[in-house]
Structures are given as C-alpha cells and as structure tokens.
Image (cartoon, rainbow, N blue to C red; front, side, top):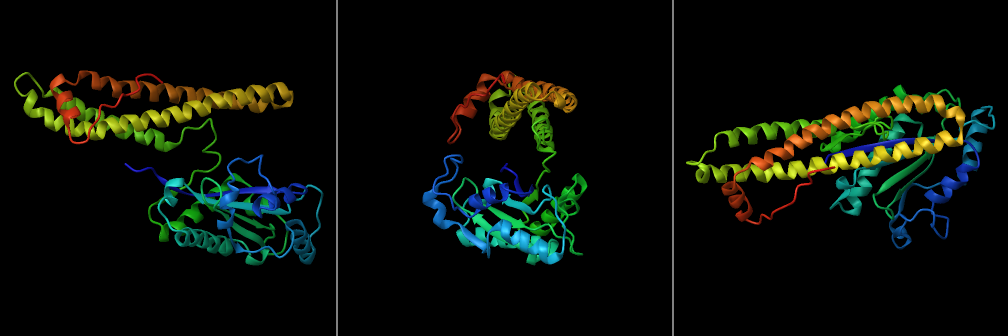
Amino acid sequence: MSKPQYAILRFAKYKGPEIGNIEAHNERTKEKYASNPDVDISRSKYNFHLIEPKRKYRAEAERQIKEAGCRTRSDSVRVVEALVTATPEFFQGKKKSEIRAYFQEALTFLQQNQAPKTIISAVVHMDEKTPHMHLSFVPLTVDGRLSAKEIVGNKKKLTQWQDKFWEHMVRKYPDLERGESASQTGRDHIPPRVFKEMTLLLKQKAKLEELLAGIGAFNAKSRAAEIAAFMDQYIPAVERMYNLMKKYQVAFMETTMENKKLKQKNTQLEQSLEKATQESTLKQLADAKLRRDYADAVAVLDRIPKEVLDVYTRGSGRKERPIEQNL
C-alpha cells in the first residue's frame, strides 16, 4: 500500500514588520539561511516565480489598501500568505515541468477565489525538502474592504477552502486526497487514517487467524505456502502500523513538554491548557486502544508454526524482518 498523497493549502496572516521577514524568505534576499537549515542555497537557482512582485510586499499592500480607500489600524492584517504544497511522495519522480504544472493549477484555483489583482507574489521554492509555493496577497474583499477575517478568518471558512482546493486539484490529479485542516493535524489529534490503517490490519489479522486455525500436523506443509504468501502482506502492514503509532506517540510527548513550558511562562494560559489536557486525555485513551490492537496483531505471529516460517523465510527475495514488539 503506497502512502496517501495529500493536496496541502495553508494560510498565515501578517500585519506589520513581519511582512519584510516573509518577503526576505520568499524572495531569497538573505545571503545566509542559518535559521533555516532546510534551505539548500546551491539549489536556489531552480526556484521560480509564477507571479513576480512589482515592488516590496509592504509597499504594494499599502498601495492597494490606499487605492481601495480602506482605513487601517496598526493591527490590521495587510498580507495573507497561502502556502501550497503536497506530501513529498506526490513529487517523487516528477520533472520540473510537471511540478510547475501542479503549482500553476493551484494558482489558477487561488485566482478564481481571490481577486488576481490583489496577489503580490507567487514563488515556488525548489531548494527545500519538498517543493512548495508561497503566494502572498492583500486580503481585499470583492466589495473593496480589507478583511482577512472574512476571507480566511474562521474554522468554517478554512474548511471550505480545503474542500474547494481539493475538489479543484483532484480533477487533474485523481490520486490526491483532501488535506487535513490545521485543527485536525494538531499534535493532540490522531488522524483518521491511523485508525483506518488499524482497521485494515485487524481484518488481515482475522484472516491470518482463520488460516492458522485450519492448520494441523497433517496439512502443515501443504498449507505453509498459502500462509507464507499472506504473511508477505501482513508483516509490512504490521511494520507500517508500528511506524504510524511511533510518529504520533513522539508528537504527543513533545506537546506535553510544550504545554509545561507555556504554563510556566504565562499563568493566563491556564484555562486553554486545561482544555489541552482534556484533549490529551482523549488522545491517551485512543493511544491505549491502538496499542492493544497492535499488540494483538503482533501476538498472532507467535502462533505461526515453524514449518510456515521456514517456507516464508525461504521465499523469493524474502528476509527475516524483526517486528517491534514494544512501543
């Protein structure tokens, strides 16, 4: 089973001095990127623009806002940045022209949903781990108001953006799945696909148990090949499940540490941290069930007769692969 490939769209809002910082990053005007080790400056020559900025981001934003006749405060959002990418697997084996076509399609989508004249820059970075596009625009509404809140401001709106983005992109890229919202990918959340993967594994476990139930001293050799062939699917599925669980267990530990630091730093955060702790408790319960199911899936392997294991390890190109028993 290949890894899911997700279409990814994220938004960030910027008000003042930080606009210059994102411009420096996006347009690669810094000489060094010590703070971002993911940038490989030897590959920066492969970066490309789909929309070139005509002037500095902040200056262009102020020009558009003035032209629209909008009043601003110091805390008004002047620039919204859309980050467009996909999971790394999606880009594997693709030529630069194919990668460009993906981002061009994403740009078309954004231009259909935000006035093209408000877009300041659209630049694709090829010099980091995964190709991605930074598209910066001034959050002006159709009727000329400055309102990032109206455009990308709440959970419902962000969900609508995600839905529409996936619906647009999947027409040309049918293998893409809908990206999960930022609220879903929060570290206290176990993505639905983890449970889906476990459900599939448990179905395979039931099938393996069925095969093992029918094996005895008289038919072990004849049934060995059938069971060994099934193990070719089962053992990689167990390994994949282990890696998924390990990934989200590590993330959960990091969240706990972050919450402790925040609590020491600012007592006003106590209420939100109590909520986070409740969410963490729910995740611990989910973790516990996943762990039990995983342990059951591994335990079945202990019941496989030696005759079957011999056939499995002798199979074409197979190697004995250790299964992690404990997380």
